[in-house]
Length: 436
Ligand SMILES: [Zn+2]
Ligand SMILES: [Zn+2]
Image 1 (spheres, rainbow, N blue to C red):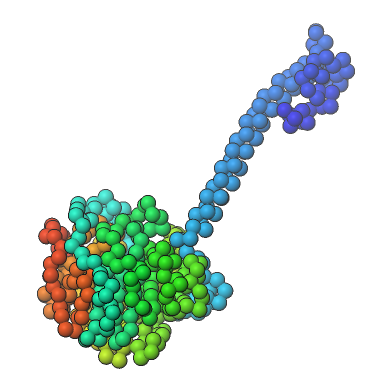
Image 2: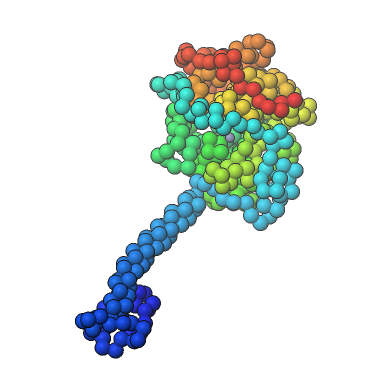
């Protein structure tokens, strides 16, 4: 009401005053009852306006309250630790000098091409066997297994998806460790793992380093990093990913960030970061591609091992093979692909091609067997891989999750997964763009 009054002549400063006023200004003619007509109208208008203004004010207050609440929620989400941190200071200055940095983000030399409509359609065509209906046939890892070095000098223990314990020429590395129940920033929503971790974190043997390929949730797990940050001396990661690690309490001195074709020595072994064709980001549309993604090559005095990280097929794989190969063992991603986004992941047939390009001897297929991150059946990647390997003569090992293998002396090829229907490469081809 106060606002309404202020907009009217001084003699009309409220209904009561106006009704008994005998001193109406000339501008306000009086009626037969002596009341100022204009004033009565003005009072009615004043009253309506006041109601309207009151409504408007209440609405404004609600909007402000909603805005403040929204900002508070957005702030809380932005500060949610699993989402990670932003590169700043020296870290930001360094990544901006990378040849892959293009103004505001990292880019692949060969652009990633998506069919967005087909991607949406694919969401509604999930295979009925996208996840196992009963727990997969896995092996619990007894910690004593790592008490002594592998006689051959090379042993690999696949723990599901892309979590791998690699022992090579007296060194030990843990790749993309995910111990959480979900590949997600929450404990209640997101792709759920199909079996519990096969080894307690406290039972991990001494490691030279934790090696991270990129910051997607199925590779960089907040809870695992927090649990390991005091026990592990070195975390190797691509450019920018150190910002997440530091945000989670990993001391800066423990973080080694590498650009493609940069390396770090661990005694007599050299670890190289190798190009990959992929993407990064933990908050959709907010930090897309602000951190780099990479593969790795481990060059020991006796053995060489290649890990693809996440990648689509790209010409640089040949260069990796020429410069750093041949490899005794390749650990190459084969699952979580889709026809609609064929440049993000290799798919089984192109994984065999990647193995050939980097000059691999024995291939361990990874990035399958733990999470459903695409629409295909959970056994489709391995079934198709084996068909392609037979055709091309590639040597593939298929250890159960948790089984350790010395790939230069043993080649387990047990079909430990169930026989389920799956689509062939002709029925569901994964063919990347710009591969040569
Ligand atoms: Zn990824
Ligand atoms: Zn992945």
